[in-house]
Length: 291
Ligand code: NAD
Image (tube, rainbow, N blue to C red; front, side):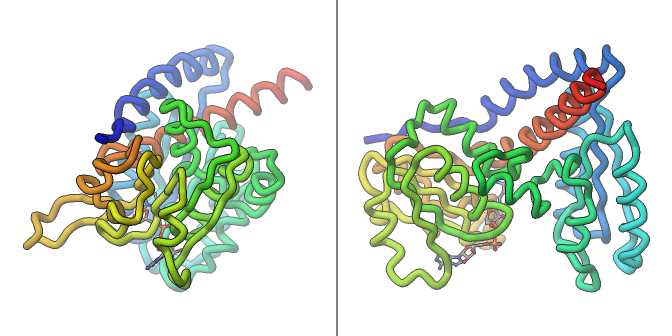
């Protein structure tokens, strides 16, 4: 069997084209969606992510701003800025690029963002809403994975799903979304005793581990759907290329559907950030119309 490739680039393009229309409609009514991205420090990877987010906003006609602070900035300065942005009606989404420098209390910063503008979906209120099955903002990466399931006609109801990784950014929200969609979900992590035992009986495997080619063909049930969230840079002596958490070539021969890296989940993450910001602006416009 050769798996069908779930193409994140194509889906991201399709969705972004539809966003242009929604943004134009909002802008015409005086509600141009606006996202502010806060970057603290000079981490090169974070700089690239932030630039990509800002460019993606502009490409669909949204307003977007990047606020950059030096790595030694006091937390109070960033908190004051967040309070100001919370009150700014032009700003529908606020995102603080993680990780923050060590002297920051990351949780306190994320909680300071108004829940109605928390387009990353990391605020406790939004995590709680997701856990209750009434999500308001879904964290972008697992949201993107759900869109890929939808596009690939993957029926999740009653399926055995295994999520590898339990981070707040990917693994946990992914598990909640799969539960909400009717799957039977097992979450595996670094303390899991026999990972293959779990993955081999899964209809759906989502890998969010951060280890290159960690999931191999012998761990996959024939006909399973394999989603690779991992983004790893191989060492220079191995070509220096990007690769996922899944041994793509091996697993492709066993799975029914699989995401590549690059070109799979990656392009969907920023796409869903745009979606969340547009949703925030639409909610805001509806509220104002109802007043
Ligand atoms: P993380 O480091 O916070 O979490 C990794 C998880 O893997 C942990 O929960 C850990 O318990 C688990 N793990 C580690 N070793 C394991 C093992 N031997 N067996 C089973 N589980 C193990 O990472 P994260 O933020 O969740 O990201 C995971 C990967 O996804 C990374 O490669 C990251 O770059 C990538 N990522 C991609 C996107 C995207 O847009 N595609 C977004 C976020 C993260």
